[in-house]
Length: 403
Image (cartoon, rainbow, N blue to C red):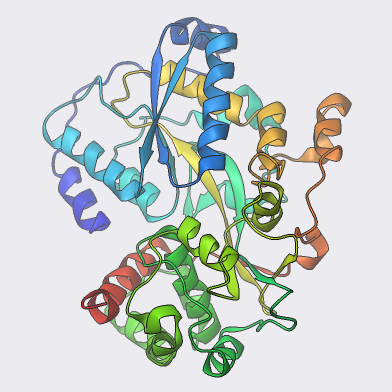
């Protein structure tokens, strides 16, 4: 659906000049232009801790830079893409309703290919970008194999981590085949969010990597032939797994929050998140018992970065840049990585920070359920965005109706 929308949007691209894009190289001018602007930040609103963090960021940008931040809570970023596409189709070249969007993956690819982002690189010119770890964290410069080209600012790191309650389970399954064997012995004790929820879709990609005959093929765009060949074992696995899921696979949690509550309520024994510190953060916030611990699949798990992007017709381009720069700052990144706040890993090279800023990270207690870096295992790269689009469509055809 996203690629279809992007293709339609491309038909409407004209040579009309947009309002001039602020140049972060002249940061003082950007700060001056941004003062008094209101930035409408479209971001997932399904997690109270994240919402509270964004609210804190808004308080800080208002106080320090005179930029008001309005969090427009969305359930699916694809809805934001559709909004931007519709504005382009209607000829709304300026004063768009989206100033900043939390994005990655197929949604970024759709906007980039359709020319619906700012007309030149900006993220790599922000002052805070100087400390981004482009060497140790290569996913900050590519998004689902597609180069970001400075069109989105890296905001956080993600890696798929599973966790379980040691009060009920001692030896969790550490591969998809092992999960199936475990589910046969413990029916109803596992589930995953319904795609296209991003975490449910990530579960599909993790399983795809584990079952694909040739995982290297996943880095190239999917064709009809390659998709059928590489996903056949995945769907055979899901066909066998679904009757063994919570509620016999007739219903799925709508998002991660709902799935985490199932673990907290004792309805399932295993769950997962796209954040290595998530279990510790949930424990710190009283959402999970202190007996919960994390683990990763034995052959590695999906990892990526998430980003902030500015649409081509944003009303507050300078303000959006100021917000993005603040969210990438050592202060904001350290606060974000604190499990008591959010627990989202930083995109910065902490070792390269000035001593005072480095101390912010060194003082963090990442929590009892957070695996140390050396135990996080191999990072599996995201497949090309075209695989996700096809996976979600095929999942809906096979399992979405009549659940």
